[in-house]
Image (spheres, rainbow, N blue to C red):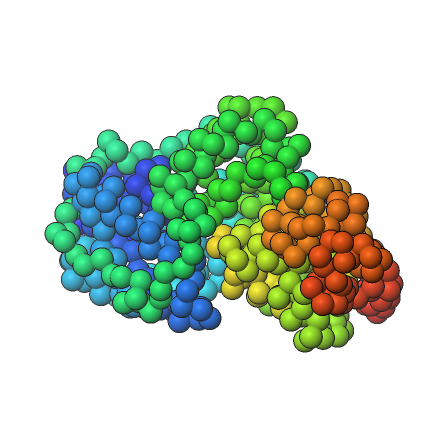
Length: 476
């Protein structure tokens, strides 16, 4: 006999109908299970632009999820409002005995879930949550003295030592679909009805939903052996491009890890390490929620960044005069995506060349990135700014020119996003301001007119950053 006669499964960062922990548990322990997703106005109302690619990605993925659940005999309520109010109200309306969901680890999500749990308990409804977003969570991977890790390499080693078959085992759904309840034909909201509009997502060719995730995954399986060697070159098809699908759960992290472990080889192992980085930053956020607004290293929380607004605007608008940095910023502004190597280059340049507080850059990425994940974004920015755990030493400052020469030697990526530099020869494209007047005319780009001169001198900016950080270190 099932534990519950009627239950509700609440989808959040897990927009798929397979290998889904909460849905699997709900179906196996309930007579009937309704499914729901809430466009949470507490999140949506804070977004600055009604043309938000993330909202459209979710919306399109939900359409596919609703169809998939309907083929299995169920369906999906897609509602709009404050989730902390909508979920208890729907639970009462459907007269369920339990609500199932997967864990979320961000501070605001934890607060929301605590509020939902209290409201449901007042109605006599159980709120059951499960691990699904990561393989290991919270206190599952700790140091030998029971503390959270603050350095990646020992965390990765402990993570791998802790790994077992159960951690990557599938949570079956298909064999229990008979418990899915048909909600009838609940209306599916338009983007406009929730205050948003379509973006260039389709034009960009971004695959959405479970089918989009699987198409990208199939493609990556054919390329994974070269991942280690190609991943740092933005003009090459090196990454998996699955980050947005991991972010919204249109693919299961267990499925990805199972593949990496079974495949073996340097490419797959390097990619597995990237999945472990994701979990490392998730546990940092869980144990240290203050990092959302503060440096992990308290002594660096009040670094006196000048944060010149004109320099910040030049970075945001791809007007720094450093081609690789500007091409990276064009990429994020036009597509909502930025290659991972370029995220590090752009972040280092903002903080250590332009001397702008890392929090401003972190928030800009938060507004723009389609794959924005609070834990990973915050962790990456604090790494680049040398304020976080496992921080790069403050004296390691990326040289935007040498990074450009190393990772985009022929300037293919640069030309793709900076067409004004299309005719600049490869030898000059990394430092076009060094071309003489005749070479500039021959290339059709006059520095200061067709493309900006460098907003700072890297050598002088580097010396200032070293002094800034050096003083902070001595003040400890």
